[in-house]
Amino acid sequence: MIKSKQKNYAVWGENKLSSNPHKYYQKESSSRRQILKVSLNIDHPMHSGDLAFDPQSLMTNGDYWYNYEIPQQPRGDFYVQALAFYNTLYESPLVSSGDKTTASQKILNTYNKLLDSADALVLENNATSYAIAAKYYWTVLQGPNLDSAIKNRAGSGYQNASAKANQS
Image (cartoon, rainbow, N blue to C red; front, top):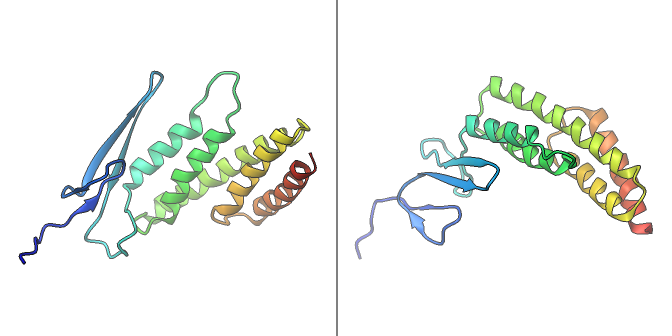
């Protein structure tokens, strides 16, 4: 049996392997166009399950969701999306110390926006709002601990919102 020396990579969104380690994916809707670049860095030692993302793409996509707005609509879910990109950037083994500092500040800003959204939902005093608020608090609790006061606020908010959601 002859084995190929060509490396194959799993390609997101497809049910096949590709020999191209760098793929661009394009997602289109009527109101926006978003390009995500997913690349594997085969020179950097990682276990086979990790993907190395381009730091600039992560920052750009996080900023896109952080600033995304639909008039008259709540923005909390967009902050959750932004956090996914910022947290991935923060945790990446490829991120520079300068980018990590920038990511930390963006994460803290997003935490505060998300917690403000959650606090406003709790004031609506209904089961659906409590459940969504609990999700936002939980999202903050799952991210990096960059400020203990923020984590404490998220923890107590989560306990309060989830208890009220269960009572409703």
